[in-house]
Length: 158
Image (cartoon, rainbow, N blue to C red):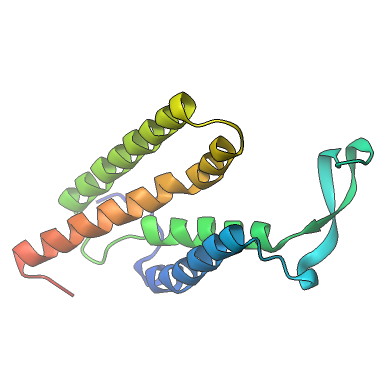
């Protein structure tokens, strides 16, 4: 089975160890608007349009980087969880992986279409923020459920 685009199976536990806390902390920081001053730093930015400030094409701007750090951690660890080879990777698991990915993409864009039709202003903005991550979350949920069902039916539950 050619799985050259999948990560080695040993990275899955690392992925889960970072993905779960980063996802929870990321949601909490957005919902509670928690931005510790420790993360306020000057960063390089492009197309800077500061409120009551100067517009610049490129320059330094003050930003709290906690959201960026957590977003990157969620994406990278989510990719490790989603695209790590199973120990017993075969054609059936590859088929489940592909079908789960297609399912996640359909649902992701279904949510996006509904948002375009029924949500506006800041509500739409927040759906777009979360929509950056939903395809990964939906894929991980669907693939994990289907793999667990497969393992139960074949008696290979780990």
